[in-house]
Length: 288
Image (tube, rainbow, N blue to C red; front, side):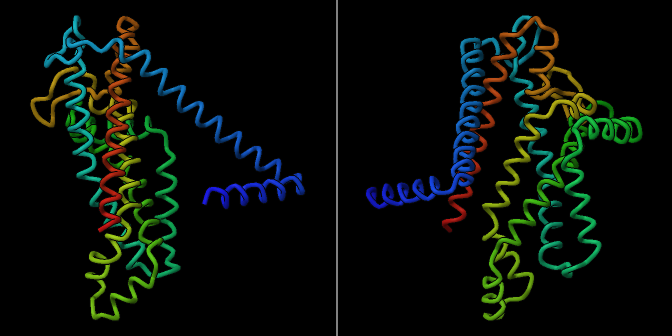
């Protein structure tokens, strides 16, 4: 098998040498891959090298004060806001995508408008969502700086992402799956939820992973909505900061840079763990 691969690679290289344009594109692709890998390794290594030595037991104290600048309250707030945002955005996004992919008529102008608007909203800066959440949930609804205001704002922000990735995952399922289900006598609803949706689950989970990454790394939108209180909230209408906001506040004060690097390392480990867990679940679902 190895000799066959080597022979195939040598044949491709000879073909590239005969065509200067192909050889140039091949070199550019390899160079881009090397640069990307180098940047990723450098960033991860830099964060871990600067952050891990500064991890101390006091950073994981239950309460925050100016001496320990504990990240535990921020970690708990991150989990709460992430789960609450996903609980709001994921069902709405998935059901919207099911309608667009499975029930809406092909060529429907309204569907095209919805897709364009979703793609446009995905590119809006997060600070715009923060100002929107501030004006709507704080100024109009009177929620104040709260976990609920931050979570609802983030759910609005990630909704277009989940909807579009889910729709693309559903459209990638072969029509033969649907035809086979209809041929066995299953109805439209049963086909969608028993055949199409499970087949598209790896793609849907990929969208959810991207949404989680955006939630965990979000700062601007939460400063305007959830606030920066470094305590565990008593209820959903209490203010609280996430890990990203906590890291921003520490670095902004310029007094706790070592603790900010430690928070960045913890945040990196959490995001990597979430991605690994989601990929593991996606593989299990795909095998089933």
